Length: 216
Image (cartoon, rainbow, N blue to C red; front, side, top):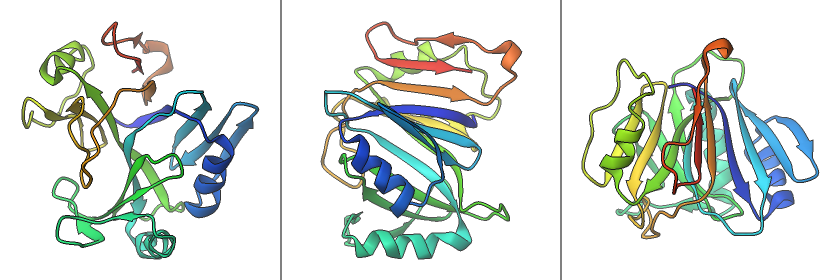
């Protein structure tokens, strides 16, 4: 599932704008009074101003050649989240490349994943979007109408990658800690839009009690 647009919320619009454009060097796409969007490869990452503080986990792919330089910038700012053995740069079991976990100004847990690429842009994709739910198997069942030819197999009743090598929804049980922290996942508004034929798009809310919207 290649994500075309992901919309999240923030209580710190100006600080987040500065961080994503200046520190992470994601190109600014649009700035409005209560929102902004940046480009992550071909995708758009949008933040909208809200009053209630959110907490998200998501991961973005970056060209392997650009990983070390940006990792150094993030390390120098003291934003890195260390693994259980104290390591900062780790190896991704799923994506087979280097990964770095760090915090943005809102306190969201970001993950930077290195991929081999000859793309002209450093940032390549929005690779993972965390979607906590009270019941992971039931929520996954509500997503069955989304076609995924080469989907990942479920890992457990509390954790699942729902998607394929192009991108995933990370389904976790609400309050389960996000690696590499002990901070439990919590539910906040998310809108995701998958790359697809505009004439065949479907929009739905998988669960009436969850603030998630998916367009595919």
